[in-house]
Image (cartoon, rainbow, N blue to C red):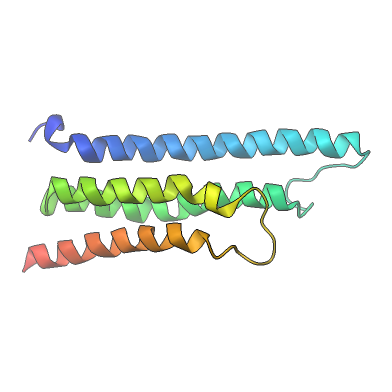
Amino acid sequence: MSAVEFKGPILITVGMLLLYYAFLMNILRTRVRLHKKYQKEGKKFDRYLSGDREMLAADRIQLNLLEHMPLFLTLLWLTAFFDNVENATCGGTIYLISRAVYPFLMKQKLGREVPGRILLSTVFGYGVNIYFAVRLVLSIF
């Protein structure tokens, strides 16, 4: 087995890591912008206690990715090794795209109600994980 055989899963894994750091940078950008905004208004910005909806959205975007990343990457690589690299690459691409569009579906602010449109991203992500799990179970029988 060579790295070339696993090019798809490797690129998807790197893409997930880049997406994770892009979401972290979004948190930093949001925090700095809100700090300046609050300072201009003569208020003190507290990232964790202010309840600012923009900060909440930025945090949830990154944390949602982080919460699901270990399961996805585990299933991606198990599928690549024990089932089929092409299936892993196809499913992984769908998953990566669904995670990349998540912030655009969430929008900039998050309130008490989670926007229904983010279910689109979530359904595709869960679907890929279920697909991988089923493929793995079938591959043992």
